[in-house]
Amino acid sequence: MVNGFIKNNIIEKKDKDIYIHGLKHGVFMILNIISIIIIGILFNMLLESIIFILAYSPLRSYAGGYHADTILNCYIFSIALTIIAMISIKHIPPLNYTILFLTIVSAGLVFLLAPVESINKPLSKEERKQYKNIARIMCAIEIVIVVIFLIFNINSIALTISISLFVLALMLLFGKV
Image: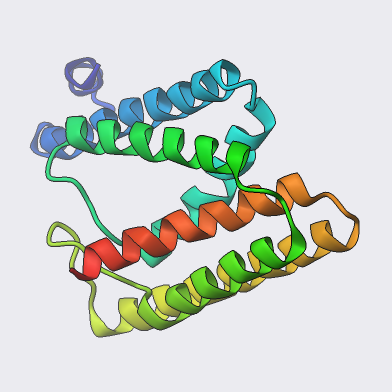
C-alpha cells in the first residue's frame, strides 16, 4: 500500500518508514477493537466491552502507563486485560459503595500519576503538563458519568466505567514500576 502511495506520488519515498509504522499501528488498532468486540460477544457482554473500550482508550492515550515492548505483546496483553475486565464486571457485585470505592481509588491514582510516559514516547515538560490536564479532565468526566449512572440506578454501566478506570490505574502503576 505504501509503495503504491509512493508510485502514485501521494507520499514521498523518504517518508516510507513513517507511513509503514502508522499503517501497522492502524491495523493493530482495528484488530484490537474487533478482538474486544468478539470477547464481548463470547462473554455475552457486548455492551460492556464497547463501554469499557470507550472509557479506557481515550484516557489511556493521555494518561499513559505500561507499554509492551512489541506490537504482538501489546495485543496479547490488551486481550488478557479485556478478558480480566469482563470477568471482573461479571463477578463484582454492582453495588454503589463498591463502584464508588473503585472509582475514587482509581481516579486518585490517575490524578496523582498521569501522565506516565514510556521509553518509546518521552514527553517534553510542556507535553507532560498538557497530557496531565487532559487526563484529569477526562477522568473527571468519567467520574461524573459514573455518578450519573449510579443516580439513575444503571449500576452495571457505572461498574464497567469504574473497572476501566481501575485497569488504567493499574497500567499507570505498572508503568511507574
